[in-house]
Image 1 (spheres, rainbow, N blue to C red):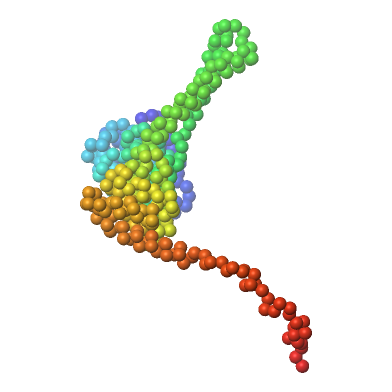
Image 2 (cartoon, rainbow, N blue to C red):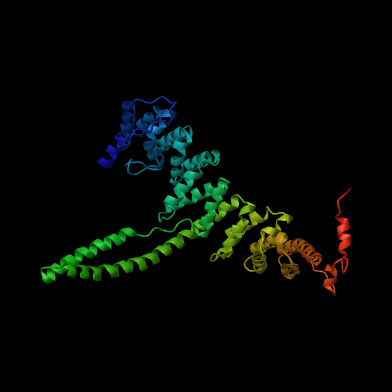
Length: 423
């Protein structure tokens, strides 16, 4: 553990005024003493004494020790040298910290508990997950912030944590969380940041090499010669970094997106909402999306909410896509498409649905097609009847006769008599 980190812990800023105003403010010496005991005993491996120090912290004081408690809960390697997952005393201390956070105001506890979703201990994760779910929609903002901060990562532990965050967003059953999950499914959450540090490195490296080579060749390097040599070295390196480096970043981004998109689809299936159906149907345009099992499960969960009055939720391209995907990939896919056509299918689906009632078709698909076909046929007939009622009638032979005046030559005397004043 570095001395710089130790000093930053001891000289931590006091909490801002107004937080926990009703709680008694602990003595500054008490706060420093408990922090020192936590740090030194954990360094020595005296975890039982650390637990004794934790016992002195009241829930109203958690804000003053939030960084140290978060380090204990997440086993921050910068703070703890000998901490391991398997030690019973460490696990006991982490449960003690979690007890404190569960009795702490949400504005202090929720961001730390969301960060703790990235730990590996299943027992603690279960407690944290249940506590976050008990808070309703309050964890939404910390979850989104954490998701955006750690979305692109190659660390498997971090990836597992991001998947847990996505699942928690699905459990919220909130339209704002659904919007974020749809962005993940579309790949529009955010783009992988460009590696600007490498460009700066190339810039400085090119300048140094140009100066050394120029002085070695000429002995007295002019500014024009220096800039010319710098351009010859820097520009090819910069272009190589942008083109090849950008291509490598895109590969990492696609690889990361495949895993996160599947997790987002599963999370959206937990909270189906008919208002999201149009956006979910538009996801089929993404590469290989319509082949994924998670996408079919997501569609099935939303189709289960539909009623016969929801046919307006489907546009003609949606209906044609459902018909086109019948019997295209798997039996599960066929059943999902039939359930969608049950609420929107018209004449374009009649022939294909009738073909699926043939004896040689799989029993599950055949039974579903026999159930859905009469509904599609009835909707088709109703649509045709509606078009028949709206059809224009035959035009009369002489349209002018409909607009002729009552008399060919009106009598002006009669008009004046109709408008004469009453005596």
